[in-house]
Length: 256
Image 1 (cartoon, rainbow, N blue to C red):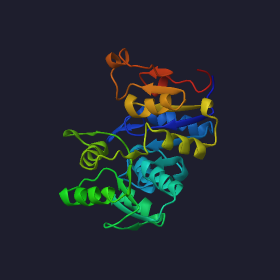
Image 2: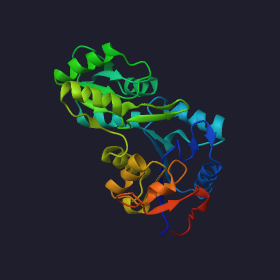
Image 3: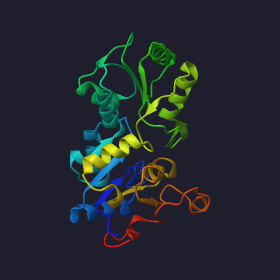
Image 4: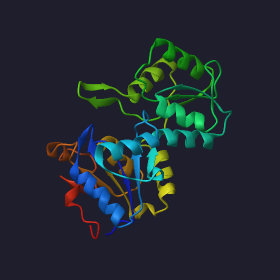
């Protein structure tokens, strides 16, 4: 079939860290040339959407409108707005997350916030974790931006937001409400932003556990590209993606 909309992961799919993936760049160019609705959906909360936009231009020569970038930070704000409690929050996270929350009118409160939001924080310490623990124990809604346990870096695998969530869950015995991929919330919001039908919208990514399960678990067709995944692992996948490609250059926009 021909898909009318695309939800696309960024890191590992369109680029890999600081490395270019030329096939990813050509894939985006084809979407733009054909005027196919698409949205970049990322669990990364360290950058603002504007910073993501600038990074795509400066590092990968990809020019894309700001409204084609939907981060887990924006999804977290949407989630808090949907809950509708008092606009007070304690945030563990980087400026990409904090700025999105502040821009939506939420006020920082470390004593008795309505929400505790936890994302990746390069400078997390015992005091921050203690403050979050106490607030959750007092009844704050415990929200996690994304479940990624690790972040791949040049140094190796480092703790991700999911590792911080696991620590706080152990300390409070409260399960977090997780917003990012592969959870339904970010996918439903992304689809709403795109305005296409679910069965005609494909989720494209390199990470089976986040990108592809986000599609499979929520009823989307899926395209796994093996830029961050080995062929050997494909044979052991519990549920196969709709499509598997070595490179996005192999994709046909006209019929699949």
